[in-house]
Image 1 (cartoon, rainbow, N blue to C red):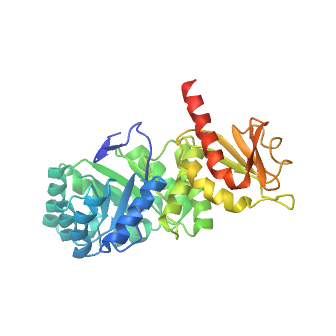
Image 2 (tube, one colour):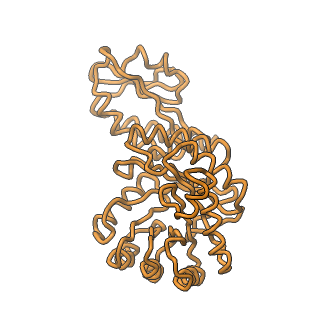
Image 3 (spheres, rainbow, N blue to C red):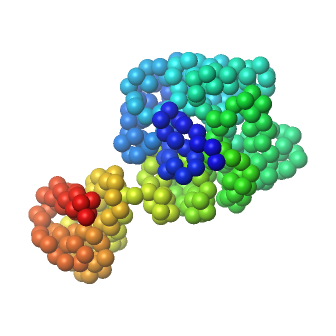
Amino acid sequence: MKTVYVRDIPIGNNHPIVIQSMTNTKTKDISATIQQINELVTAGSQIVRLAIADMEDAESIKEIKKQVSVPLVADIHFDYRLALKAIENGIDKLRLNPGNIKDKKQITEVVLACKEKKIPIRIGINGGSLNKEIYEKYGHTAQALIESANEHIKILEELDFHDIIISLKDTDIDITLEANRLASSSFNYPLHIGLTEAGTICSGTVRSSYVLGTLLKEKIGNTIRVSLTANPTEEIKVVKEILKMTGNYSSPTIISCPTCGRTDYNMLELINKLEPMISNLNYPLKVAIMGCVVNGPGEAKDADIGIAGGKNQVILFKKGQIVKTIKEENIINEFMKEIQTLIDEKNQE
């Protein structure tokens, strides 16, 4: 498989799977877009895509690029001039559907500009936007997505352009799975995997976890995005969990009990504060946050480190052995220090 670089990030072959998301701000609202990009990067996004709906959006890329460090992708449809302006203003990658630009001269102009600046193109094929001829021939099927990808790849290859990434997405779970399996065996280009219009946080997480987890277990996929009807930082949380579940990401796993009447401290508020802090640590610890001592050291004795609640305090335990107590007002600082100490000790082993 070809390795494609998005600025300095390699995609493909045996390189680590790259986490992506997309802003839902108006790109022309530069300050809001920069703020959301930074939030996504803090959450763990390595590449961020921007909607480029008009020339003002495309012009905004120049200023946005000055204030963020992450590689940016311009999402372009229909108007080749938006692609050219995005390239001019320093975009790192284009998400393009060449079939949406009918004029061969216009396509050639965009591709040559990308080639000159070493900007890769992601060919994004969605089941809901297939051209009429392919849809009439193949219907709503995985083969229709593959044929559409073939058509667009040919356009680029005829222009001697090969810095290509492919995505084949559908709202239908089975079609998405089959299309990506076919693509994995048919194409020599990296695959960006996702389930389009996956749904809300609850339904979208479940559906995406099934589809993307299945593909990753089959060693299919080089970049990943979970598409949720939610704040895009929620997408990153789900992606990380899917990658951890499939052995493709190294960070702590948090286990916790559902709580009951024995819980004497505000565990839900605490876990909401601790989860983002723990999730961004780059080490595969098992961390337990439990409601009481009944479910603490015993039920979570295989956890590397954990806490269990009491009255105005918690106990801290490691591998089921109680280490000390922590006053409730000091839990976050003390627990995070203990976790970091444990990571440092394990790194020295």
